[in-house]
Length: 570
Image (cartoon, rainbow, N blue to C red; front, side, top):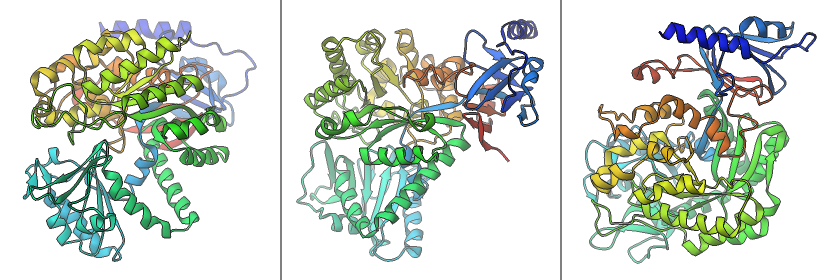
């Protein structure tokens, strides 16, 4: 039966392949001898593809595309491997991804003891007075609770003992909390008398002393102290360090098959750096950037920064990023009801709703998309309310394609509003399987079953989901995220509400065509269609058909951006 269906599909490919005309110039790049899944319903599968310059010129059968091979054509024999539209990372932090490669990696730590050992080792080779930075710790992923601890969070005492002459700043895996040692708190001027800033919390023990954990906006107290230490660097040194982070981010993207990266929040200053790199032809990955700035700054500068396809198609700036709440892991997600495991708290509201309304007005005025980080059900409801009000005041013939970033925990009454309003759910498949170990503790079974990572419920409502990893919060590898999306399987073998998992076709679409649509880029990318950009990822296995357990063994063999091979597995 499967063989018969393949023959029908192949006949369809041969009958509907894009025409190659006599005398047509040779292609610069030809892929042949594989399975090419185009994500274009008019021609879903092909054997070969040709590109000239940055664009695809033909897709079809091997013998048809062979007519476009010339003396200088780069011909790649796929040897039966799978070629798909280049993965689009729909929500990540581009510079943060690179910077994470320049600090201690705590993502594999099994306990607070492991992290202390990492930092102590770094202190032996770090000059006195220099900051030690790390990222990726998560107390819910440890095999045992720290001793001592407060609500599962470590206390700084033991870490401070091994780092008396070094300030230490360790960012939580979610990015929504940080840990500081005694020296870092001293430099920041934080002590028992320091008050919580709006939208943040300094965790303190029974005596009122800070334990070293800073949630949400309170992180800025320590970050500012670290920032002051960087003032000794020359402007050139700071720019060189930034360029290094960007280069590392590009390498990481290309090695993982990512051809486009939707950056979830950069300053105007950072965008100017991207712009300079794009002008010089030094961006290797296409960036679509959300502006992150105060309303006052947006009012002054937003109109000057609308960019579409700048730098030969490598830089677009057409969205605004706002965070209305925090993350579930550090109890920062804003909930309608208190946390099951922290009844005194319903989370944190980071951006006042009136401020968000003003941001929505600015977005509508300047034709920018509005992308709002909302994780808790209360946060999502408030954002949907603001969006609905804005759409009523500023009707548009075209979909505004405003987005809720994460949309992780929804009240059942709000799920249908996404499809009704045309609001895009920008979600991360691997957040589901990473967070599932503590979601039930935070929300309880009822709330988790009704609205936690409710992918199928959203899709059935008519909503569009675009996928990503929130890197460096999670591993940027799209294959791992695809696996999480289609299995919802945890490391212990259990499955988190499997009725909500995506089909493989839905998951691939969320990483390609729907991701492009979420950025107003579906006419340029997201499918392997003649006339579109030749952004292509070649995989060692067919992730649409192999057994679940083989998906994670899939490797990226080629990453092609604009018809140029930017990564080849050696």
